[in-house]
Image: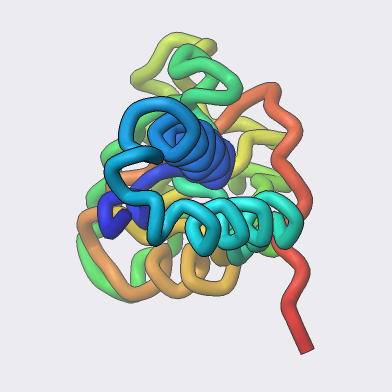
Length: 172
């Protein structure tokens, strides 16, 4: 079960459902006679698990989950190098659903605009693109913004033509 934490929410739910079905099969057919003293408590517990439908905590989607959902062809991997921490990227961005930064505009004559000039149009960063990760940081638009500002070497993962899922609700 510890390996479930690395899986996406839907894969964890499927794994738990499969485990529940397997437990039911084992109890009903193979070992029920051998372990009669635990059969009834195990069936009661199995029934409780099915009735409870224990929720899996919500968490922001991982980049790999997004790539699985939308296809890897919807994502660009961009490497940028700022000459200093003070150098401006030349991107105007806004938070997108709390989990990414949406590019509103590319400012002329700054780093990204110069980078774009050396790229085919399909590889250029443009308004509407979504920055979903920077240097491995993902899941929070604020954390992505901080990563853009606090590094000189930037590895961006940018999504194009995708509708991001709504952010997870926070329990109060």
